[in-house]
Each structure stands twice: as structure tokens, then as C-alpha cells.
Length: 232
Image (cartoon, rainbow, N blue to C red; front, side):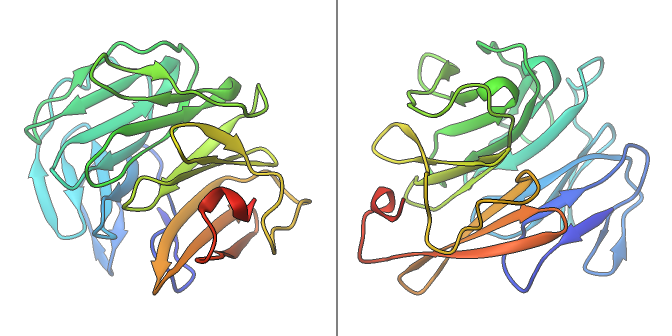
């Protein structure tokens, strides 16, 4: 397994099925298939067929995952709700830490990323321009004016609910209940490999963004004096 952590909050994790995950120098015995993050804690979260693991804590053996398409990402919200996403638009949720239930979604395309602010809602992003949002009526296509067809590979955000998605050569911003294409962020290099990872964190009053595109990680600072969309 590989962890990209350029002296900042967790950015990207990758693991192959059937391999262990080394976290803080300790090897886990689990059959890891998906790795991700826990809200507000900076913990590594690993989801496998036999266990759920968060840094140095084992939550137990999950049920409800058998026979699903390969999962791609998992996120644990501050209230302990766990959501994982993957192939064919698959979304599964656990509220008790042990059993996952599949949810109905409006997409059958692969989902690459999932994220939530500490109080929700969950967002999922994926291939074919898929941008989904969870709500009282279930998963829906989120309002947006972004370019269609982008292969969104990752999503991250801040505790106040502002979120950023990255994929292809595009970055999108969730603000004021709508996804908007980020045309320009100061310091963002427009050329290079497709974006594959993103992380958001705060440093004092500043909003920091880490964008991963092989083989580099780029750090961006959003102007704290401006609303998020005015940095774009």
C-alpha cells in the first residue's frame, strides 16, 4: 500500500486487494480493498471483506459487502456513519459500524470518491461527470454548471461544507448548493497529468488545497478574505 502525505493532511491512499496496509509503521493482517479517510480526524480508514480498520482501531467484520462490484473509496463521518462507493454506481452505508446496506443511486457509472462534512450530507463523484448528493429523499444528481463528461477521481472539503472535486484537467467547487467549474485558482498549473487526488485543510484562517497529479502534489492557498467561489 502507498500513502502520499507531503507534510500535510492525508491526501491519497492506494491498496490492492489481498495486501495489508502499513499505517504508522504497523502492519495490519487485514485483506484491504479500499482505503480512505475519517472526518475531522486525519485517520486512515481501511475497508476489507473481513474488517474495518482506522489507524490503530478495528471496528469489526462488516457484512453486506459480498457480491458487490469493487469498491473505490470509503469515508467515515464524524457521527460514525460510513459510506463506501464503487463500480456500477454502487453506494453502501453503515450506521452501526458492522453491517452495510446498498442504496439506490441515479447512476450506474463507477464512483471514485466520497466525502462528507462533519454534519453531512455525503457527496459522491465518479466517471462521466457524475456528481451526486445525499439527502432526505436519497441520492440525487447534484445541481451544477460544470463541464459534462469529466472523470471525477476525488473529492474533499472543509468542515463548513465547502467541497472540491478533481478529475481530468478540471477542478469543481461545491458552494451555495451548486457545483461550479473552477476556471482559475492562483498558483494552479493548467497543464500536466490528470488530477487523481485532492485534500482540503485549514491553516489558521486560510483554506489549503492539495492536488495530486502523477508524479507531483501541488499546494494551493485560497484567499481567506474572499468567499470560496471568488478565488476561482
